[in-house]
Amino acid sequence: MRTDNTTNQRSNRNKIVLISSLFTSIYFAVLIGSYYFKFDNQVLNFVRELFTIPAVLLLLVLSVISGMALVKENKKFNSLPFYSCLILLLTIVLLIVSS
Image: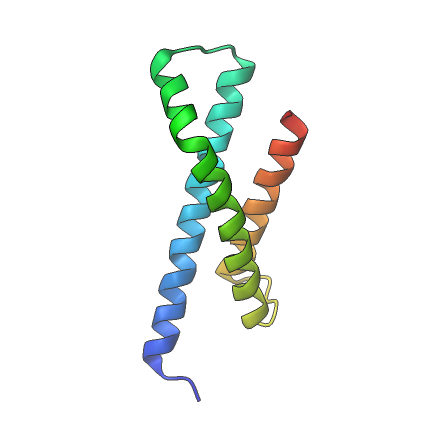
């Protein structure tokens, strides 16, 4: 039987993964948008060099975490891990299509 404490921890973890997924997808959308609109700035280049590899690693780690959480939630389509998986999958597809 689950206690309320573990349920709250799981819910908080799922919220953190969802918010991190959103920020990661926004980061990549801004980078792709700046590439297509040819917005070249030294500060943006610095941020791109500094954060792109950690963001890619975060994308992969979040995909694994949200996939495992989705399996634990019995593949419910109205759960936070499902939305996290959907956002991360769309981000990966966007990265593949834009390259």
